[in-house]
Image 1 (cartoon, rainbow, N blue to C red):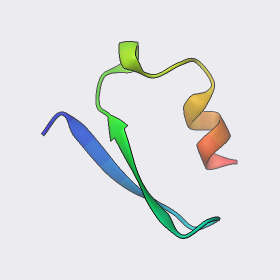
Image 2 (image 1 turned 60 degrees about the vertical axis):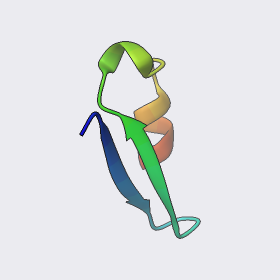
Image 3 (image 1 turned 135 degrees about the horizontal axis):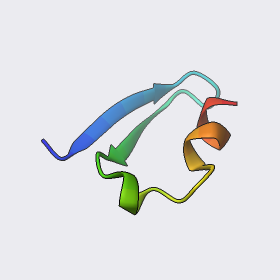
Image 4 (image 1 turned 30 degrees about the vertical axis):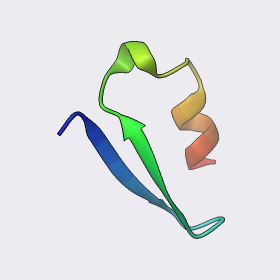
Length: 34
């Protein structure tokens, strides 16, 4: 699909991320992975 579903261990929620770099603001992934 066009989306990836990630598990966030911090708040124990699944995050749906558009698999399109253009749709992802700079720094968003870094913020999620912190």
